[in-house]
Amino acid sequence: MTLGATTVDALVSALAERTPAPGGGAAAAIAAALGCAAGAMAARYTNGAKHAAVEAQARNLGDLLAGAAQDCTRLGDADATAYAAVGAARKSKDASAITAAQQRAAAVPADLLALCALHASGLAAFIPQCNPHLRSDVMVGIHLLAGAGRAAWQTLLVNQPDATLLDAAATHLNALTAAELTALEPRT
Image (cartoon, rainbow, N blue to C red; front, side, top):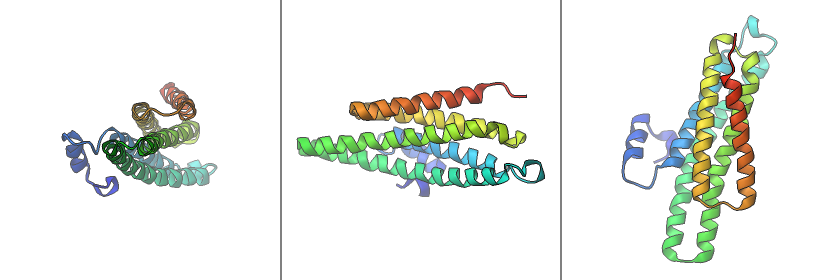
């Protein structure tokens, strides 16, 4: 099952099954993809005469976020592949294969967390320029990215990352919190 080619109903059903994949990594990736897509849509509606000063910036942001949404689904697929490799390595009882597989399994959610932090921060910075009728969609995007990033954090922790990866991930987690706090501020 590839996430990008799966219907929402099929994905939800597959997640609910007693199977190792798709699992939490896929759920986090889909939430992140939805967050990016909501932000892309809001950016693309920030156009026309009222938004001429920021239209090019908004169009670029929309394109960037649309591409990031696709990156998220690919990371969800990579998470399933990495998880399967950990299982295979454990069955082989080869210590070096287990270590390598665990490192890859930790790298995927770390990458998703970094992507979530980057784009949630970008959306938070875009709030003042956004078409005011679409600000709620920007907020939805930020909150989905924040939730997805926190879910990726949990997946990362399960995979026992080294201290360097854990420190970088903690920085991304803090950036998500800052973006979400911006999204929670009352707007007039």
